[in-house]
Length: 238
Image (cartoon, rainbow, N blue to C red; front, side):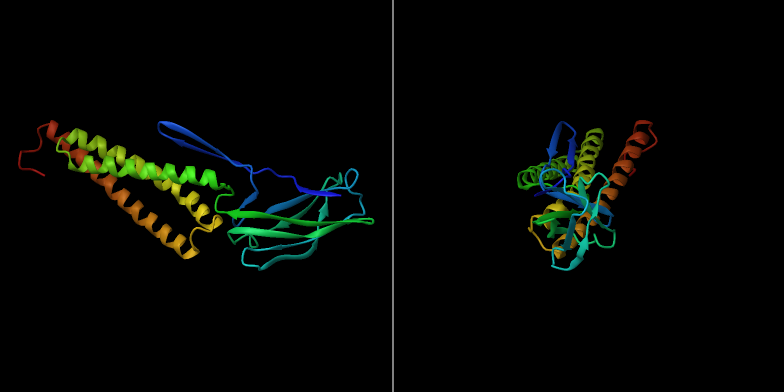
């Protein structure tokens, strides 16, 4: 008898201004946090397992907490698989969950032993893809600070508005990509603790507030330039 997972992992597409990075993942199962989902197992014993097969399993959180204990799986009407439902209150822990149990079809017994991950987005990145995404974020950070630095230092108002606008665009793009992906990498790859993740979230909030201030500054400079061209501002006016 053979047991295996029947769900493939999703794909993550990341689009960046001048380049398109396709990050596809075919690793372990992953589900979105605080959602209801089914964990499915295909049971094969010289064909699909019979209707008298019993599949009993338990699911454990990353900390070892029991989520499901000794629960019999529900067999599909066509006998092709068994499933266990994890509800939204049971899927609140991020990280790798362990599934253990057995299926018994007559005299044949097989152990169930696999894991799945719960992530903020339901997407999962392997190590190589994680390095790619972190590298992309680093490039975006460098571009952001470069455009903002030159934009704030340059005296020519039109160029100042243009460069700071591009910098603000990259800033928003960096925050958007970082918000969930970096958090997933930190937790799933065991790079940082949950406390660090909380601090990272706080830093994103502060950066976002700075981004709003930057947008207001761009609006101010644009209005100032508009009035200057119309001759409504004197040389000494701010």
